[in-house]
Image (cartoon, rainbow, N blue to C red):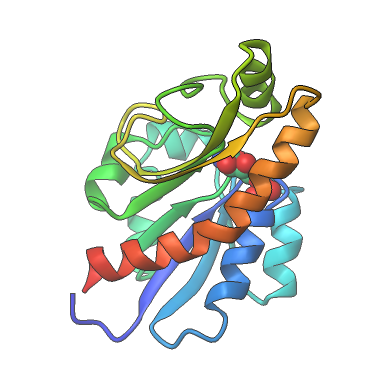
Length: 195
Ligand code: GRF
């Protein structure tokens, strides 16, 4: 690709703390532009973050996402080059994956392949880690394929699970890792896959 700018869409369904970090990280970047926030929830925290940062928002509907073209046409027309999933809970349909080969990445709050798959999100992940008496957990950043949390891993980093952790305290430690590493890894993948 020989475009001057890589336009990135960030998909998020929740609070959007990772989306916010990504927006901040790339705010002065002249070649990587956070161009669109995509959410399936009108009242998600990430929408406020988008508005505060003057980034356009696309609210998506289930019907078009799963039985239509998964907004592929919209994203193409908006010149989106790369997609980051930052707390987006819907499975990505095949046509969108095929339209963006190696250009969709996700972050997962465990050391995949452990504690991934359907239903493994948010505190469900951390509770399962604690229930299984794991002594370490961490984050995985990976390419997205047609199966939940099964795309090729790009980056992992570990943290300790403490004996007195509950899901919330572990979630906090994991979020810190996400905020430290996700934007940097996204930048590296974009450079690798779009230049
Ligand atoms: C993160 O823990 C991420 O790993 C998972 O969803 C969560 C999103 O958190 N995929 P936030 O909305 O960015 O705070």
